[in-house]
Length: 220
Image (cartoon, rainbow, N blue to C red; front, side, top):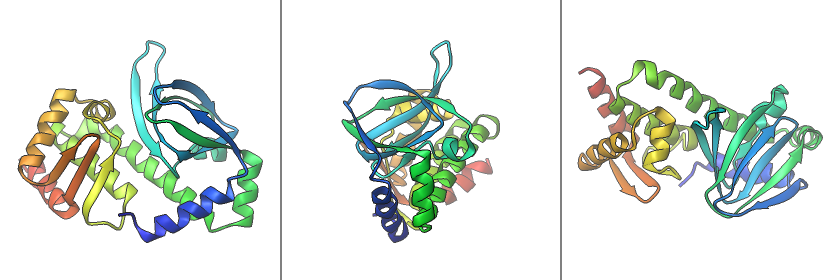
């Protein structure tokens, strides 16, 4: 279940921008795309967004699904970025010009709330990814990752929070832990009944109980 505020904001922003061109992509496609003068909104599907180096190494940044945005930072700051997009499902996206975005925001000021929410969510995820390597043990990284994704996606929920779209390998790539290390840590959290695990789905039983566990392991 998502917060009411987010559910109300999403359709308003989506359908205000629905004049954009629709592009379709098949599951399994990987696409390098320069983002600067246009923004993309996922109409349907699921897309992993990654950065990559010339040597071919990738760093998963986040996963976006229906209603979520790619390119808001780049369009508003006018600083471009090249992303590697992995289409996890058959997907359709709206490609929207900078002029259309500006007109939409001017005509529907309430859509700023959703745009700001999206940017804040991504900023928080990026900030904690930077701090993981320096300040956290592997176990703490896993717990912090789950908490940050949960809180940024569903800020008003306390129980039964779904963290979707991440394989163990995705999580490991995000916070620089081996896939086996991620699997072992998640298994431990499951045995303590803090989470449930299904295919590409982790359900956090109680965000408060997970936070209490994080505080305990920090004191070790």
